[in-house]
Image (cartoon, rainbow over all chains, first blue to last red; front, side):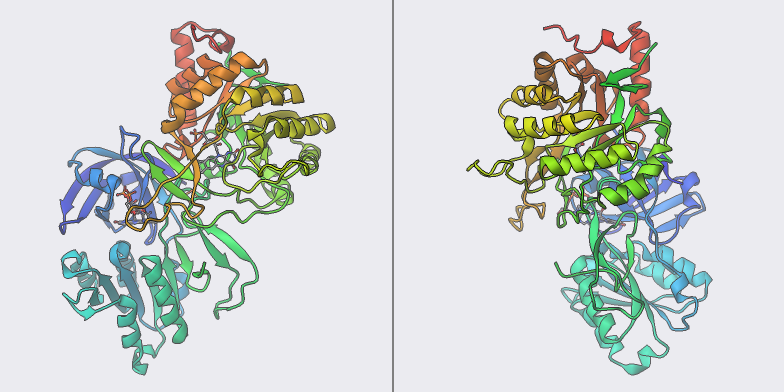
Length: 277
Length: 310
Ligand SMILES: Cc1cc2nc3c(=O)[nH]c(=O)nc-3n(C[C@H](O)[C@H](O)[C@H](O)COP(=O)(O)OP(=O)(O)OC[C@H]3O[C@@H](n4cnc5c(N)ncnc54)[C@H](O)[C@@H]3O)c2cc1C
Ligand SMILES: Cc1cc2nc3c(=O)[nH]c(=O)nc-3n(C[C@H](O)[C@H](O)[C@H](O)COP(=O)(O)O)c2cc1C
Ligand code: FES
């Protein structure tokens, strides 16, 4: 069931110069969301920006509120950051499939998060779920610079071991998060028992991750990002090329299918996506 | 108060339809829209064979508008008839199936199959700006154009389908022309029961950091409030030039916009891009038209259609 609801802003506070934490009161929705799902947020009273903006569920607070972590990158997020507590936005949700947790039920290994930039957003919610299931989580987090690092403390509080990389080397590993992961996995003991990967971030990062996962024969899921129109699977604007695949990661492309990131995703099996154009 | 209108033989309980490509196959909206309350559902355009569609990004936003270059992604006629159509028929409203094809024969083939499957009304999409067109006449040396950019092509295709089939036939026209009334008149002469106007405006946007077009397809179709005044003028012009009903669209965001189109000459309207912004908008438009009629003591929509005082 989809809901289109007015949501009151409970918090809208600055975490870093460009990243904000938004909390919305949406009692009807908050209990129905799962990690990896997103909301389609509309700023009321304007046609510019016209379309809604997809934002991941970062956490559920007090059963009634939904927390979102967003970066100001353009018109929509700029206007959002200017909004005051008590003002109202419109939210459409729950949207998307969310991370598939059934895949790790019979897997004894640790869970690896790989987050690039704002790809960190859904992992607090996911960490909470895995905490309940008493799973060991190692979070690999990549950011441009240490100033942009957010929600790391929340992940730690939820029991995740956090490893940070920054492009400029201002904190942790200097370089790409996929390279940091590769270096970690190069030690054979990190792969017994086999870890399972959940990742979210920009496409080039996920593509590099695919190569790392393939070289160590690891399985996992990735959450994708694309410009969205409707958010509910109707416009076919947000598609990604996919193939029929097997759990073993078939290389053969038998049939290419465009799937909708908003409806069939945003989470896909890492082997399902065709990364090359 | 009677909100019903007629498009050829097709009677709609109200003038509010949803535009092709902006409402999927309707099931996507079932939680947010009472589908049986719609005047009609116009489906995403289908083609004889499945189409993969264009590369991504397929969307870009511009001031009060959006660009799309989907490229008519669809699962093909047979799959549509087998999987989608049975569900659509159960939605409790009229279904208008949008079709695109490469030639008169292909259009006839598709429309006949749809008719056999129980479809009453078809919208011929002669105007998608995001696909490659075939040249209809071998002798014609000009480059291939959007069918609805050439009056002859429009006439050829519509008349072929009109002669060989007896569904309610709606021709969907392009605004990317010098004079849309010429094309509208050609479609009317060819036997169209109604005209849908307009499709999207050919347009583009560029990322100034990378110097890349923001759409993989380079250009796309502009829709949304940005195009409303231009679309409205086209409806106004065409209303004066033809006698068949017009389904007006282009940037309709609310009931006021819809009523404006009807005053300009539209018998029915389609809500398009607004469905993405406010998925329940079609219900609001119906309610808004009702209260307008009540306020103005209008018994029949004929009292509004084409009544602009000029
Ligand atoms: C499923 C999903 C979940 C998301 N979750 C979050 C989140 O939790 N936190 C967060 O900060 N961001 C998230 N995003 C990205 C976010 O939606 C965009 O940053 C936002 O829409 C930009 O809006 P804007 O008006 O500020 O920027 P615009 O002015 O629209 O664009 C500014 C720049 O960002 C690019 N852009 C716009 N929309 C997107 C998009 N959807 N994906 C990638 N690039 C885009 C544009 O091409 C342009 O270069 C998510 C995206 C998706 C698809
Ligand atoms: C994402 C998208 C997809 C569309 N797909 C189709 C299509 O398949 N066939 C068609 O005839 N028109 C298509 N259109 C055009 C709309 O039906 C409509 O003519 C146009 O968007 C103008 O109305 P609007 O401004 O209310 O959206 C599409 C429009 C959008 C935005
Ligand atoms: S955004 Fe419309 S199909 Fe995904």
